[in-house]
Image (spheres, rainbow over the protein chains, first blue to last red):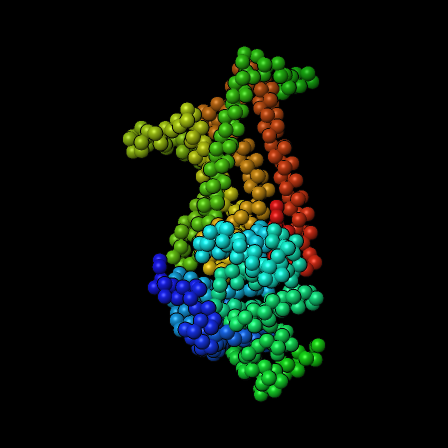
Length: 270
Length: 261
């Protein structure tokens, strides 16, 4: 089952800024639709993400933000429309090779962390390296240790998830996704399940990643974070992109009525 | 009143004419039959549960057949399965339809009724245990499968390394419960001539018109089943303690209380 594309684009060969397509489009969505039964969640989303940029997706709950992320890594294959990842179409009839192609390149971090509770921190970060990338256990463990140190958890290597705070768990989850050396990272409301005092430690890790040039798509309710870190802010409502652009435009000077109303409500609640 | 007491508790009978040795030998058959068919049913049940969870349209027939199998064997008395296997295997071997080594199995020096019993119990209890495994697999939050898949694991890898290890921890108590029931049900194999503790006890009862050998057999069963039942209670209590410990920053939806066992 060796996919030709795999040999051309080895996991390490196309890291951000490798020169093959500097700053160019890494991900493009064209008229992506997704429905669950009679419920239409995405109604034709168009979006382009450039390599090495941070895209923050904001919008009211139920607007399809999470579903959008889940479509991009094919956890929920779209019903219609096209998604191009590094120039290759990943939509249409989903095959095993296609799934491998996507999941080798796209990492995801979830609202509920979804750490493996029967594995300690370092095992959480090393297991997929061993089983998917076929790294030997020593190598995988070294990489896991390095990543956990990088997210500030060098002293928690052997702890099980139920011994870690929410913020610590989420940082393990980020390290776990990074261990696969993804080209794009998806963050699905990763701070929404956290106590307020734990939010910062997770956002700080994400800021660092952004500074290092990781391509990131972040669904978030943290407007301050979006303003500081995003290259592009995308406002979604009712399953479509209403407005997108740099934070200075979308957040500070929204053009659409719905965007204004949403931002007004969010800021009121501060 | 004395007669009543002696009918059930005259253990002098147990120690006459080598009865004690026969009863113990019979109970060893019971234990061996329980162990062999218990282990096979655990494995077969897991196989069935995994077949039932195979994703996608391609595997729809497999899922359908698995569900049908489980329904049939859960809905038919074990005694009937024992009798069907006992009567049919020997006959098919006699006709030469199946090899004698399978039709009249005497593997490892154990008699053929023993192996017929193993087949019947494994087939039936495999179906019961498949349902227990299924409950365990379904109790693992969906986010676990999604996290595993998003890391590039295949469905099979996610099952093997993420879902099943968590599911099994959850279902150890109900599986042990099924094992206790299985052990008691091995007594049904006595009807096809296995000299298990029940059959030996019955033989003594019909010779002596006294039931004490069977009472003694019951005590041997209790010697094993009561500690097992206590163990189940203990494991359940421990799980509940762990689950209720979850709280604070941990969202209640993830069963993180299961970790680090």
